[in-house]
Image (cartoon, rainbow, N blue to C red; front, side, top):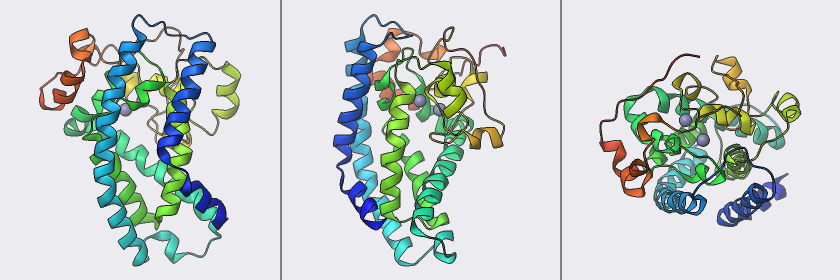
Length: 271
Ligand SMILES: [Zn+2]
Ligand SMILES: [Zn+2]
């Protein structure tokens, strides 16, 4: 098990991201897509520039993250240091605990106005494809980076297990935004355990009733357990946020300064 964890941690994260973009961009070209784009290249470039900013912020925060988690592991802090369980179970529980903490931080990002002003950049995309995953404000790293640190300290997760979590969660996150329509049966079968693309697309609906749902990245049971699971037909969906539904509000600069602008949230009607 240790050699598997070592191998997973030895994979360069940048290659994983490039591989995922290549796979899902090709699938979006080859398969029939539910969302029709007017200017797809523009959309991609806009999200790509945001991804660079987000990536640089992540690199800077990673220094702090690695420092704190190395310290907490050296001092054997957290649940998994106090109970005796095999390593493979520690990895599974570790990934689940990180997903659980991320669920709550994501939910907070929709509840606290300060967090929402940053997180809404991810929701501002009025079109939807795999590049939407990379649309995030650089400041968002403070929210989800803190979530990872807290999970590691509370549950006793070390850096190698955190590395496994990132390798597991990335394909989920890119697939969840991809502009491809999976058959309904996949939701019925795999959706019993995992957050499927159709479920995350509900989270990107313009109507706040749906936006404030399906917060988890990997496992569906957090949303079901804490009453935030919602499902609706993908075909009739309007993506994004009404308050960003204007080409001038989709530019890189507007999105970067948007957390510092007072923007009233458009809640929409309860369906
Ligand atoms: Zn969200
Ligand atoms: Zn999303």
